[in-house]
Length: 631
Figure 1 (cartoon, rainbow, N blue to C red):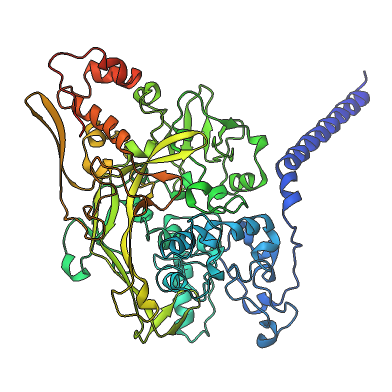
Figure 2 (figure 1 turned 180 degrees about the horizontal axis):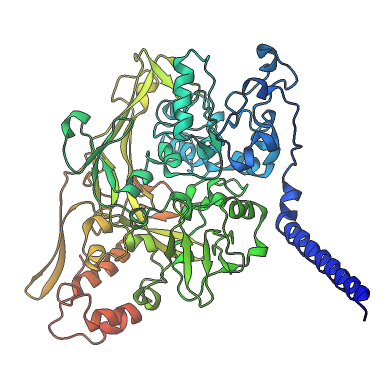
């Protein structure tokens, strides 16, 4: 082959290689984005908007919401060909992302996410409305579907408007500024708005100048959701956000805890006492490390209660044998966007997908030897995901016990709550309509405290499951006061515990006695529960810490009476599929508790009971064993 032909041959091979590389590159990009293109609207790059005539050299945008790519009007609308300020700003949305305008702003590019959000519980508050109507006697069940923005002005509706209706995504953000502990609602802004320090400083300068000095730093709209975004709403009710940080609410005034160690005053001036933080919080993990976009925004379906919408389980990451996984090239469009926006690189590894529903946790992966890892979304730190301890994996006696039942160190308790309507309140604020009027429901709380979670039984088509419970509604409602009757003439009493995931997770499980011999755990409330043996006859005795409530004769903080059948007309829960222990179940639990009086939980006998159950061991009783007698 001559020199000329050799050069031609190499040049031809070079062209073929280039074409192949181009083909594979385009194919890879297509593979990564083809599903996104099917679901997301393309925004044509514009260079003709007049906005930058005044707002030039503005910084701070996220990479994917830069005006160089999508313009300004994609988010803010307005007249993009006008130069004169008033005309250019006509029809402009100053704070885009509220659900009232999301269809014209965020939803143009993210229609699927908007659809999910509009049907999510964080928007509808269906469960909150349903339970409130149920306890007010305005509904026969706590399972109907509602929407907080469609409620009227019944006694229950007014109660929600006065005390609860602030926390829903439909509540509008009307003022500039970062998301804080006091923030409520704001649609897409609730999670995706992030102010840099420079943007905060520029905003202060803009306001103080009478809005003449235009900001140079724009807040970013991105996927970097921080715990502060969740705090405003989720520090209320069951107080998951504060629990996660280790703080329990108190009734103290701010002045009472000045310079006192172990106390913290949050932005709304509520005072909290430190108990113990969640183990995940100690590792700087964010809420969204577990609760991904698929849960936070929902899946488009309408649910009544939050536990129906939450799909992730502890066992998804802390699996028993092998995790449920999917490959990178099977990611859905939403997950792929999160993966790309966070610059993850584990495209060659399997990614954990939750068992219930199958959505992926894109910040996880399984390495080549089967070890599981989670990438912290706050700092990119790599966290090994330890599988379940052997005791959990081989424990047959507790297969129907949820992880949080054993691994929650404490939970909040609120008792002695009284609600009455003050028709003379001159400045009653309607949280839904955001306006003042006359007459307001008021809530009076007797005590905030904490304890180990109680346990309740969830009944599903899969069977029975033991889950944590809290005294969510031990309260009286003066319904007559709303109807103009004299105070105390029409009062209803309710003793309803609520299923709860405390978010106070600890690595070491609670010990056996903390379930089998603990009065609060069993549902009796705080007090002294002891096993007494007299004349070779064993009996359990309980002395409550609180006096009996005159409405039903039970201790103030109890869920059920001690070893007696319950009156389901009064003693119940906020769910129709969740209940306290029956007398038979209490006896089974206390039987083990009696054994624990002599046999240590780490003894071979008690360890054997975890695998085989207690019944086989009852056939081998020693003559010294004294089992309980039931009246």
